[in-house]
Length: 363
View 1 (spheres, rainbow, N blue to C red):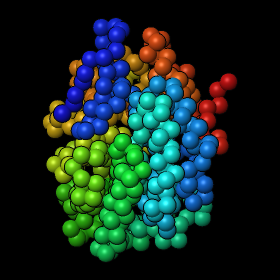
View 2: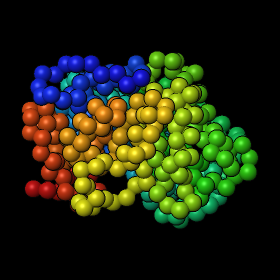
View 3: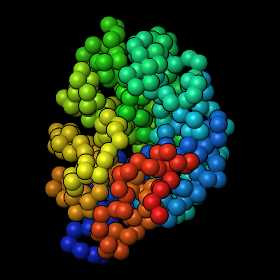
């Protein structure tokens, strides 16, 4: 299912600059701007000129695909301040304009949709926050309301409605965010999901809500609209989601019509010494490609061009997500395309996370 076409003239490899194919999705290269929270939307989640400028800068810098920062799917639950929203039809025209701006610079655009749950960083938090169980979040301390069956049904419908809006706006695909401790990720985690009904217990039950989201999206947007899911390889903590269970969940999602899995993991503030040339989550990504044949976008720790080339050639990784390197150098992909294959300037200092708009602090 991972397709590669020859194209760019250059060195013996240069596979990263060949076409990336995820189901019906096609991009000019395998380099992806992984979804990044900028905090540049309006208070109610609207697109701003500042956000559009960031996307245009990235597209002009050569990246083949931009996954927008997450958009919240219900108006009564916002995970972070000034993040994008997609909770009603009035968003469609402004997203259409943003997508057209990205397309004009020869890049593809994917909408990432999310319900945050108790991982919220909004101050004060949204008044009514749902979760799989009424268990305090280990980082925020927020205790959600355990979602009833009717509430789960409404959540599933909210994701599907958001996907339809993304399709109507001209996005090239939609990505369901089921990683990083947000609501769908919480359902997968035995630490936060202690339910005894059909949404709790074995991994097949804990993954049920995501499968239902995928099924309804597929029914609403049809079989050809590209559909991705972002998934933790594991939660990285004792008692959390394991790699074995995550693989089971991923295989279920592929069986239900997902075109690609973006492999990520538990978020942490990585330091320079973490980057020794090997991206994070590689063993899991290799297993997923080998055992399921699903296109995989590997995100986390991508710093070395030659390492990514080898993973594409030898292990069939379809694409590579970058975040902080593109905050530091939006033109990084063009620099690589021109033959300069040095490591990015980004030092992983995380100073960008404390700036307005998450901008690089290096001179």
